[in-house]
Image (cartoon, rainbow, N blue to C red):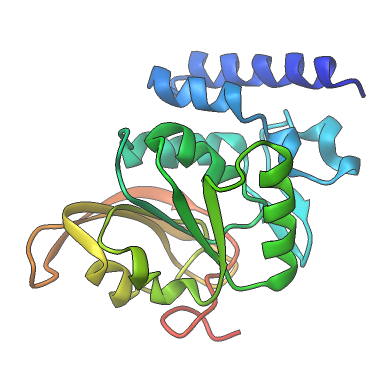
Length: 221
């Protein structure tokens, strides 16, 4: 399928998400239009990139449905200049969207080497070389070299909130993370750090379903 046709389909999806009040922030809409999902999937799935559901990526993982990505970006309230960390690079798509909102280098941690390569290839082809950095490692430990963070977004489901991620948040910073069962149902939690003693307040945004967050402070793979 020609890229013009892919982009027309993508624009229609974004308009539908805006009409359905999933996308409310014009900056999130602008990011979605700048970073279409079809640039972050394998060729065989490009014609389905505008469909609002998860799609397969290498290593048995998935790229999230557009509405779920939009919901998390809306909740994150990302502003230009914020220091942001993503846990779970996957295809690289969400990290590119985050970059468009913070306009600052973004770091994303991925434990699967095949996906590190996949994400890096996608990001380079989409024009995000030296803007998004994909780190091979255990995302449940965060990424201390660039801490503290204004925002941390976790794109996999954990059994509990990993303590290192709270420690690496700035006071007033926000963590978004699905917490619950392994490969089952989780709840999307918004965790705000309220003091240096790592005290937090938590808001539950309802049920979601993500692949497992594997690591020392997550599920054991």
